[in-house]
Image (cartoon, rainbow, N blue to C red; front, side):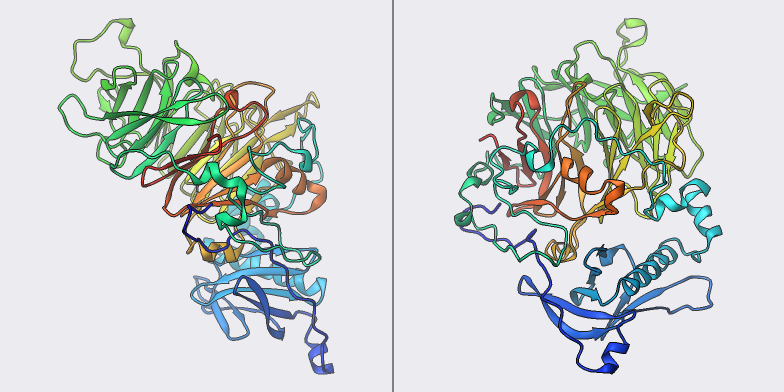
Length: 588
């Protein structure tokens, strides 16, 4: 989306390659076993750059201890890394990549064998550069574990379960966010997985070309203040924009609209010092908000804001046996516990610690302390080096934890001492994590992609379907699916990272999440969850998905999220909050 009178670069359009050019000489024909045509992305289109090239990979430190693989294509050379944003398409024998500082290119290989050979060699080079180990079976087992080497390479086991029994419609019949027309966002252009058997579809985000985008083009403005950091959506009366040391209040409206309540709550502790929270959650039937400032030297303090009184009413020390326990993240116990009036426990996370706190004072009696201590109900200190970064909970209180090393751990609802299932990291830190209400799907955000994991497996004893939160899932679990920006879109976003990926918000059993959203600089990126599940099913052999919708803004996006379904029925409404404090809602 673009506000009236402004223009952002075209992003998210479907771009095909020109028709293959014939090989002119026998010499060129002899080169095609591992070669192909090179295209460069210029002026919103791929243009033939060279009729016959053979991409080559070489190690600058050949024979040395630390690999440094370089990809050389024609006159362009650059290190192999996730920053290349490489995506591949088996059907069209095509790879697309970003050459940092040079531009975006695509190679269409002349033969399937040449395509497969290059892809295998590139995967090995990426593994070696990422993990600084040679790509041997022993090294892969060291990094991923014996049971997950094929999994990490994007290979499903023969007995992999892909449970889409909850899907009652084909992807074309999927409900889409309100005002999405023919797969487009209210202010966005549909993007498609690269293929060469379809014509180009080009249009930009100019408002004059899309009359259905008015809702997401008109901001709900707030008075000036610090940069917005987060948007907390409520399922009851209000939603909240956190900006600096203040919270702006919005009223939830029938039909999914938001209105500015013209209420701003200033956040100060009992000593009158400003609080600038970056983490928090709603609680007590959304009458309270618990706030944490892990980036401001306050990691051992938790604050409770009473939303009706508009002030901080409690502040606790996070301690166990008199020792401070600093927290880097806090979340509600379950997907729906913020709506409950008598739910007093919640979860806290640090680098190597997972804790369940109890906000009730000891024995239910108010302590006469300026800073009472939270009740340490349950938890576990893990070995140093776990580097926990983020967490999310299911509808029944199971916990998914993402780590700096990329590992994802699943904990059941009864014990935090040992993970039921652990997924190895793919090489990039997990910066945020979400999970569906039923625990069947996990979405982990990294800088360059969203990692989608299907946790469903078949119980070896009963034969029934269960998930990795309930039982230890072995090598039969589905390999990760990667949701990525196409390289040309990554370039338009100036290499900005994907952040805060999440599913649509479901708070009751039997309801299904329909969309996935993440933010990237000035853009909200939306994936149709149903389409992802069907397109990347094991039989489809598609492990990387690059079909998405885009909504753009003229300011950096602080949060892309969704209105609770109780206000929208079968529709889905996107909410975007920019760092300037403007809020856009598809509901009006």
